[in-house]
Length: 334
Ligand code: PHE
Image (cartoon, rainbow, N blue to C red; front, side, top):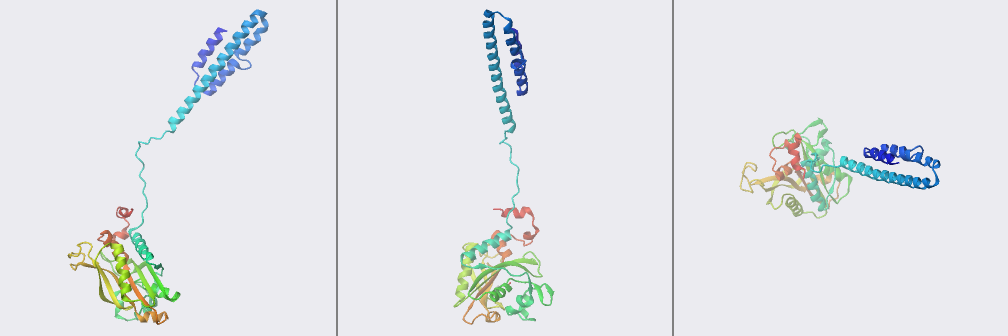
């Protein structure tokens, strides 16, 4: 019996997995196992010996059972620890760099301007980039052969269809669709045959129109001054008489030069001011063209988004917006 115990102890020492442990268990405690065989020998013994022998076998059996159980626990522990080690994450590793997309500076500027006007109660409307001559010019009080057409070098698709040169046709489109009062801005792309460091053949404008009863030039001044203050911060604003066929009187709006703070520099052509907006009281001919009642009037304005973005972010070449160099665009991903 002693040698069986020895044999078992030798065998279990080297066991390190469940499968081998199962086999060992069968080898000693199974139906034909070494211990089970011992029980069969009891019948060959005398009564006195039987008792002693039986007791010894039972002791051996429970010794083996306990040893197997203990081994089982050890193996389980080992397996668990090993899998935890394999699954462990090295948190000291530097992370992989991910490239996040960002909103384009032009889109960002449009959203910012929209938010300001929305906060004042303006709606947002859209127009068409390919427009009839009638909407781009004639209904805005710019007849064919009118010298004012020279102000805007136009891409013609045919005699009657153009790539819109400004967002102003949206004024007419919305007024034809809606009865007064109306109050909206309209952002979008416009096209002109023009290309240098401050002009691009395609650029963005935001149009604004407010029509109601009893609207005065002071309302125009108030809305635009407040808008410019909200967008650029505390800058001087001045209104200068100007001419647009679809507004009367017309004005251009300047802000104090952001670069030189009004001292005079190359950017502001040494005037201390930068032109940022065209505006005016809507011309009676335009209101007549859309059959608006006589007791309604209002104001309109138009601004170039690229110019606003260039001034706000200190960008000196308009082409940077359209080259889509990630190193440039990345700077606006905040
Ligand atoms: N449409 C004009 C332009 O593109 C700007 C403008 C809009 C002026 C509305 C007055 C009123 O230059």
